[in-house]
Length: 157
Image (tube, rainbow, N blue to C red; front, side, top):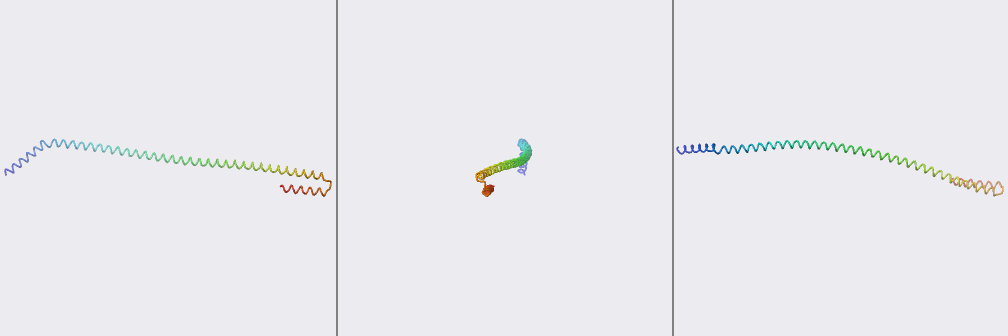
């Protein structure tokens, strides 16, 4: 039993020694480690909150950019529609101008053709008149010349 008592006393002395000399530095070390962990967790929470704010700001910026891109696309569609209408209007104006110009040119050519036909008919009539005057006053011959002149005039028209 003496050995048992020596073991118990040794164990108690070891317990006192550990409690007195080992525990305080170990406790300080554990407290420092716990404080370091608390600081790390606090820093991680602050970083997480900062990341959330940045993410929200990024989402807001993305939504703003999307809205702006939509507005730009709408303005581009409106501008292209306006340009298309303006192009169509210019095309119609140019078409109308060309039609009027072509009609005026056709009228001018028609008038010139009439004048040419009138001049040629006048020349034929003059030639026939000269023949009638040059011929003797034979009425049957005059009728032949007048008929030929009318036939020639009708052939030209």
